[in-house]
Length: 257
Length: 292
Image 1 (cartoon, rainbow over the protein chains, first blue to last red):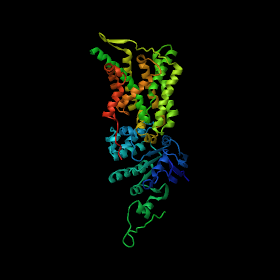
Image 2 (image 1 turned 90 degrees about the vertical axis):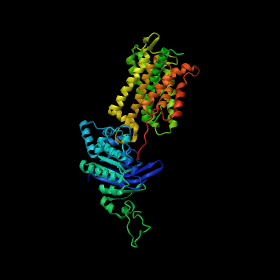
Image 3 (image 1 turned 120 degrees about the vertical axis):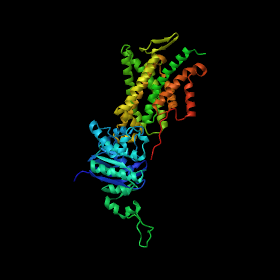
């Protein structure tokens, strides 16, 4: 059996006295896009922050390519080949686009390869090339998201964590960004762990998915199966099923409870 | 009435003084931007710097420049260790605790300097003891020119460092968004310690250059409070603002002291209060609204 690229085993993470994640396990294999769905406060962001070292886990282990990486400084984790595109973009506001991208490649010294990767990023996001001298604070939300993804790519990571890239973007921009995420996976072989609230688009681009609720995993499976599942349709996709009597049953429960 | 010569003389004195404040404020602002800690012991870095340069100068038989470099570097090491060994542990505590800690460092540094070098006023021999005679009755001493020149050079070097080098840009990045910098694999903790070292070194340089004007004793660090006022005038968190504010305070000071000798030395704080009333964010502020 091959070692998965990322494995989280029985992770428990606290925010102060509150247990935000209660024993979550997850596997990401090389070359996959895996998505984690869940509502606000389900613990998705906490899960990613635990993986990248921004939060310490009180129990459990995180393995990157078989090597334990939990409870280390996030810059050390990043140097092991895990890049994190944080929720809300978090670009460097007073650096320009080109400098933001250069910071993504901070730990690389191969100048030519870095220059080539900057071109690759500009290829995926042509608008960034035109804005390369502009301060990131003045970019629109969509442009900042593109910059954040590009910056993550510049680290040439083994695994890219993405926290809600659709946050605050128009539906058309969400389509555009997710198309590029798919292309990064297919053309650059980038493995991606994607956390989303937008279940529809996330399940369409990913191969496998997990569903989180109040700090625990409640479902997992192939994305196609999840898309077809009644519970996901009802609670995450908002598709309504007509009842036998021509109206919705008012006491529909999630089957995993 | 003031003669033209007197006005020029006071202005030059004030400019030099303002530059010295500016060098100290530079360290304040750098450290504040990197860690959101206001280091109330920053004036003491300047005081220690003056003593260290004096000590090295005596050990090396009076040669100023090697002593200057060694003195500044050693204070840089002190700044680095203060952050790496102590400040890092208290980050995340309430700002009152951090405030008290930095004030305490001020007391400790003053006492240490007194125990090592004594409490009397000492003087440092610098190569800047001559003066340039511009016209009849108007001359500018070399030490003042040295302070202004050093400020200009240091600002230029720092500007190039922060805008052109990978390390400098990373320091900016870490101060703008620390968590994102961590995610990019930037060694934020080490960078913050280096920022402390740079701030301490600049202050030490200011102390040594100012030594011919102020002499050296354990209390010269209180100049740091005026530098802090200057930084607030300019807009805390903005380096050009801090320099501008300090120059303003420095230039106003000798004139205010001349016209209102009864309240000598208070003008800096009056200017600070006025600016806080009229434009609380300072003359040049660097803020932005985060987009969601």
